[in-house]
Amino acid sequence: MYKVAVFVSGRGSNLKAILSTIPKSIKVACVVSDKLNCLAFEIADQYEISTFSVSDKVKTGYLHYEELLNVFTKLEIDLVVLAGFLKKIPDSFVDKYEGKIINIHPALLPSFGGKGMYGMNVHRAVFDRSCQVSGATIHFVNKVYDNGKIIAQETVDIGDVDSPEDLSARVLKIEHKILPEVIQKFAENKIVVKNNRVFVKN
Ligand code: GRF
Image (cartoon, rainbow, N blue to C red):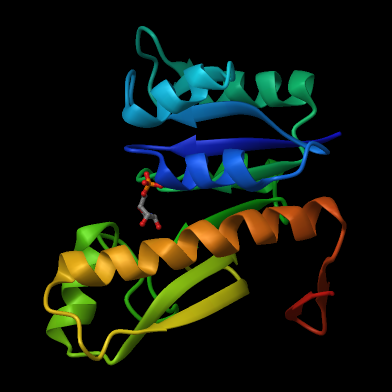
């Protein structure tokens, strides 16, 4: 069984897409948030998946990242997926899961990424620049925001969008498609890093 931990901060539509698409050989073993409650936790509850709130500070109701690492070791987590997680992951945690931690970004990196570039901020910037295409990017997480090697990208035509909200809905459809696909490729051991590039094997 290939075990995945999914990090979320809000509504959890990507979590839902993962849960409704991945094969039985892959298990979402836990869902982690920087919030005590969020819509994504309700989705996790429906699927009877354990949830944990995490903080880099010592706070009631939250696990510290160091404690979360122990939980992940016990659960034998193979892959950490950031799916709409808004906080930066501490370096010590990234070190432990290097090569096994990925993020989905709702634009075509390396454009429109970096600190502050999340959620609607991204879509507003893409819209205001009058970009004619946008898309989603899945990349490895390293210690710099949105800077890890790119694993997968898919584009969408946005030549006729009339608002950033319209644009975000188009990109979200792509996110829901490519994130479960990439998770499956990881489980099948078909993501290979070679010559400083990432290959997704058929
Ligand atoms: C997605 O667009 C994701 O790419 C971004 O935040 C949004 C989260 O949406 N980082 P959801 O919580 O999966 O519905």
